[in-house]
Image (cartoon, rainbow, N blue to C red; front, side, top):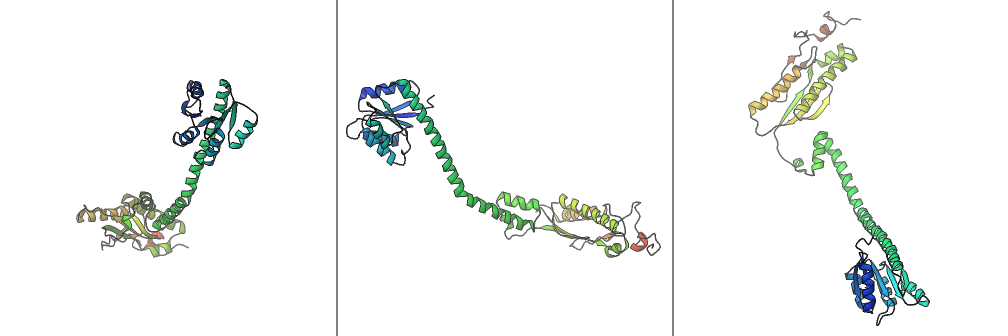
Length: 316
């Protein structure tokens, strides 16, 4: 199989050129020809052949001189060359010294010629593959440092953003490559601050297991609200939490108040039980409503009395 390979035939005898063209084109090779050494050197660069069949005896530049010049040029330094000669004696040594890859004697054996051509074309394809891979590796190494530096900067930037923003928002900003939202600007946001009234006395009156159970329920309720409104948690410490949520510009103020109070109601209707009351948000909307028990009754205002069986003091 020729694989569309191009072969440059160089011979000063037109009959020899036509003979080689007939043999090679019948096997699917693309053939270009030259009848002197200077034209051959020009075609070796412009036509970009995959192999050269070069006659030794030619006027002006002979085959040895042409082969040496091909090897001196970076573009043709590894171009396969088969020299065609009438003798196998001293010319064989001179051909190898000039840089030829192979030598074939006249009269030509067509099968031998085609076998040598296929062998050198296979080596040429391997060389071309290695050359392409080397160029790709060089380009990869050239840009590797810049890409690593960019990735390190992104990781550091993501770490800084996650100190102040939710992980989802930080990832979205870094992946988008657009940090205009981080520039100085004004936005309307809703802020909620909530803690549990009576927390100190409640902590002193209950066992650690009950305390952690209540905290888990409170944090679970707060977490659901944060996810629902795409809020950002400013701080969360014990029974205290502060969150900020974005507000759409199209919302009216009555609707904002409605959504804010809806969030407070969600906290009040949570599963929290006991003598704990919820403090309202920053806007002065303090909803000091005690959490209700299972039967809908308000708990005893005295935490110790409620938790200790209504006797005013804990059992020993």
